[in-house]
Length: 401
Image 1: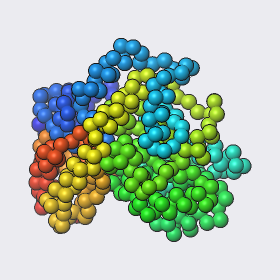
Image 2 (image 1 turned 60 degrees about the vertical axis):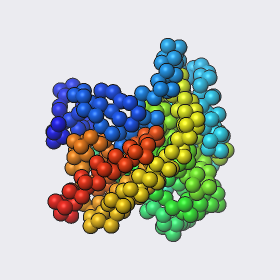
Image 3 (image 1 turned 45 degrees about the vertical axis):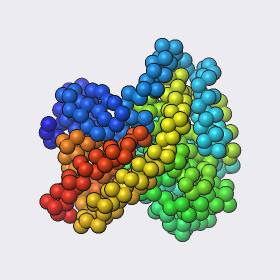
């Protein structure tokens, strides 16, 4: 297989730079393409396939649900919504949930919550603090909140009302908002995904929580990529011992079935009233069953412990093989959300890993991202390193920064 040029389609809109493979089926942490070639899945559908592929407990549950009811609309009560909402509030310590279909939708709803929160307080032009290198989606509002000029380019004018600050710099946050009565919320990822696996420091998170309490701002934490057990806790901010007011979720919540959620605490739970927000497909019975079963299986199989333990093993193995090499700037992340930052653009590694039978991604131009299924074993983690380390070493030996 050559991963140099992707096959084109005359009918599919040209929005993705695809690799020249089409996946056919999967089992556990492995997938096969339509030519019969196997790959170790180090990408998990970009942190989506929590339970891997063809999970023996998830698949029958979804088949059963499809035979009963896929969609009904939110004109009616959906029992699965109440069941999944109860579980998410139990795990998060928050109080209420709105269901949608994607992380973008969840983040868009969070932005609307913040603006409505401000208007309800008499603030005509609410402003929200966001962060450099953040990624919150590609709608006009969420790309405006995103800190990536490449994502924004060609879609101006951007939505106003955002104040951008650097990560982990409390003085910068205070300076950017000092004396501004229009600030209503601070919005960030606990660990930036698309931005290059950049974590917020736990002490900084606690300081932001305190500042939000002092100034009556909403603390809104985007856990779309780093949540749902990926770091070894249900939500990555829980390592800091805090609770947000608003928490968007998606990706891993449905193990591949599209489902998003906005989980809110007391300060934000009652901002929306009927007619303020909605979605056609959000909270449908199939998606709710996927979320319910995903969490049940994660609990029964202790996948949070697995993510923490196997993730620590994988990070340690990567550090032994690659840490300290000229050209390797940092190996960072937590649990099964890891990034290897090089000192030069390394997009070619995506293709070379694919040719070697490993799926991963390169984000922020120079960060190799690993977000495999949470069922990953130690042996499979070692296999990732055995495939990836020689590719990185060869690349660094031949490339110039």
